[in-house]
Image 1 (tube, rainbow, N blue to C red):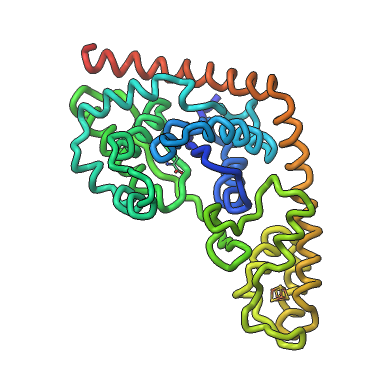
Image 2 (cartoon, helix red, strand yellow):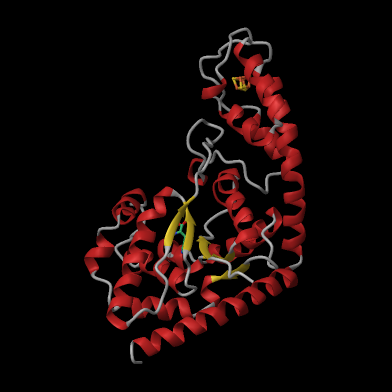
Length: 328
Ligand code: TRP
Ligand code: SF4
């Protein structure tokens, strides 16, 4: 049997998942778990680099994140799903890699300055935060991750991981696989206020939203701002409701809506109602599965445990090679 290519990726447990996560990340992971040997993990130590002052929330989000993953169809039979902090080798490899990582490499990562500015209300002048991409390098190298599905913002992190593995291999002999980013293209998805969908802007449609919450978010959502009256023709290209139609409504109907919007044959209220029913039908099974998993704590724990065991096995082999290479 041909060996499947190893894919590694992680997600920080810092909040509930919204449609942006689904279309930007999870949909891609669902595809990947069919064709690759996937290791997907909950990066709770990474969450700690910014949430260290209030670490309690991480634990709740960790459970919810696993429930969300399972609800959308990530399958522990197909992919190894686990929690980063349960596999201590991430910390050991992070430490060992830190010995060979020049400070300048970390300081030059663009997200370092950007995030510190963006999160200026938090004190991120910490060692842990500077080491964020190094921990990420350890996450990947530990599993000999060849491909790392990430969004464009994470590409510099994967490049750094590649440089560090390369440096390790040239110092101590070929030990780990040099990873490569696998760019996920995320469809355009705006929040209900027309800005980027993001938890901090409070404009998200969450996978866990009830029908009622969904309706309350969609009905007042911004549409084409130039369409002031029902009789004004609209431009679906600038309308976030239309973007969602493209993702959740059958193609023939999308074409019809496109035409009817431009000629003012439909109004925004009806257009939103159509979207609501499609989106609600999409979310319904996800919501239900999510609730079932959240109620069945034993099952969630069991899945995380199985994932941890599989991850530990692979990580253990890598660490044996790493320690030997470093003459430890
Ligand atoms: N930094 C990633 C993010 O914010 C999460 C992450 C942690 C990750 N470790 C990783 C992604 C390893 C890919 C591989 O999205
Ligand atoms: Fe947007 Fe639909 Fe209104 Fe057109 S009719 S502006 S696509 S909500």
